[in-house]
Length: 432
Image 1 (cartoon, rainbow, N blue to C red):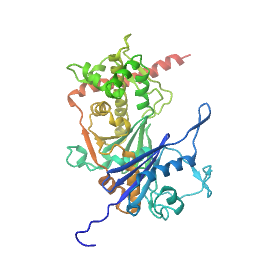
Image 2 (cartoon, helix red, strand yellow):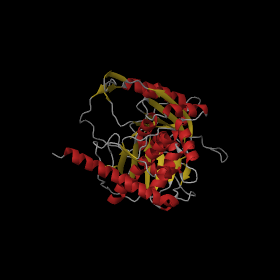
Image 3 (cartoon, rainbow, N blue to C red):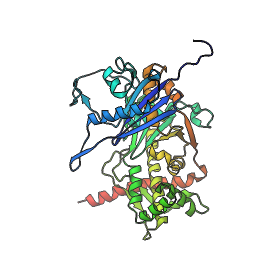
Image 4 (cartoon, rainbow, N blue to C red):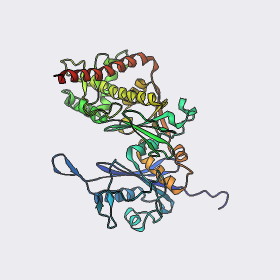
């Protein structure tokens, strides 16, 4: 190769298998998402509360989206393929028919390890790729999201974590529910928080995984169940906005001179409407709202929405404090997922925790994480950590408004009182 000749660009395909759809992205060596596609997958409900899906239908959707994202690309430039999926498993026999899980198989590979001899001819034909392309050991979807954000190079952004190990970072993958991913060099046992799991997300590190059972789903529940929701829909539609963009602007309108968060001084929410996953690990807990009035206008809806968002952020603070009490040291949050696109949600997490929040340059962090796996399997990076640093990019940093710290400390005191009181009420009612 002559001195003026450039190396051809190298690409990686990341595939994310969700509950309702399969998504894929074509990603370059710098972590830039070049193409995106999604395809719905079918769900069957043969009887009430019984749901089924077809592994054949899911594979067909994987093939559709992969073919779409590589359209027009020289297939020789595609170096690796990485998958992530919801936390479920389908095992197939030699005829590719579903099998029950049994004890066979004892080789455990870390995320990003290259599997076998790469893509088989049959799979390559189905996916529209070349045989032999590196295929990576895969991850759960939330873990792929953590991988896609937690290792970003933060130089020049004024973040304290720049001079700290990656273990000072907490990845929060926030959508319908939320997962809180913290890693450590040594195993840390946190009551009420899953793990520690070795090499479950980042090879060589132990993973602790906290979570909230409902977050985006809770916000939808509170907003859509309010009497003023039809009015909100009409007004948001008239402005060509989402209902949440409209609520955010409405909060700015009614806050007057005070910080927007102070609108909930007498309205408090405990967010465990579907039980508590972390750090209490108590599925019997219920949601609570205190401070309701008779009025049900748009102002009330906006303030209830704000209080719900704050409650979710307070829940994150609760998880962080449990992790730190057990031995973690966390200084910076890295948010991804659908709720990270909501500026109010992001700012409340910064204000309530007192920590800066880092948002990725690419909003599809889960797909970037899957592509990082493929990049590692290809051998183009020496380690997953190197790939994370080069393919994860900081898009925006949101800093906490420290002048509001005293207010959120008080909100947190009330937050803890709510669950304490709920347990007291239960004890009274169960007393014989």
